[in-house]
Image (cartoon, rainbow, N blue to C red):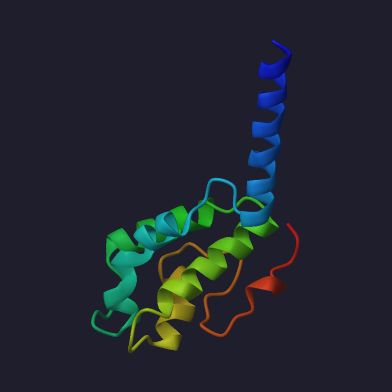
Length: 120
């Protein structure tokens, strides 16, 4: 019994340490990327307005990050994903949350420093 409790304590400590290191709890970059993938045609200028799936994804992104570390993590995920696409339009990226009617708790900009997101 004593060994089982010790193992449970070690597992719990490792989980807390992992979350502290990754800084994002349950939010993953895969989740962020999947929500914003429908926006690529709009932010590259191939479509005049974002499709409905894109705006639904922006709204889900808005709901994901609960605290400062999560917001910073989501911001970094967005920047990393954007780095993989050529021809992104800065104005379209910046305006995307407003066009979708779902402002984010941080600006969308390729040169934004995610570490400047204020504490929630």
